[in-house]
Image (cartoon, rainbow, N blue to C red; front, side, top):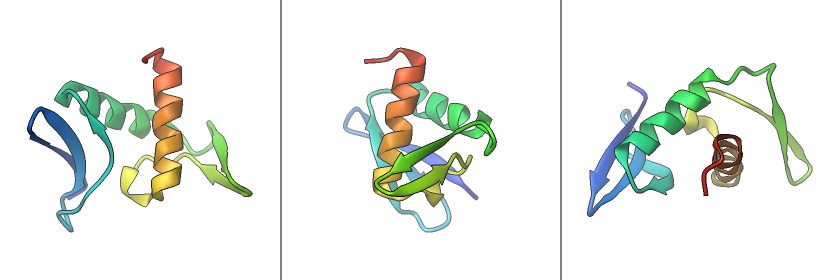
Length: 85
């Protein structure tokens, strides 16, 4: 149970293995998706918080718990931290 990746038509998406629902950003490569999940799981709740509107959000290792706007911010932080464009 948890977050898995699935690929179709050259793109990779995250999906919840419990509900079978895809969510979050679309990746170009399976390695990128798995690396994002490893990066997220390596974050601690004490390590960082970020703002979404007026709300303060704490890093959580399970990608399924974020809202879409939160997950987009997390993805942007990942891209920025990794120096990806």
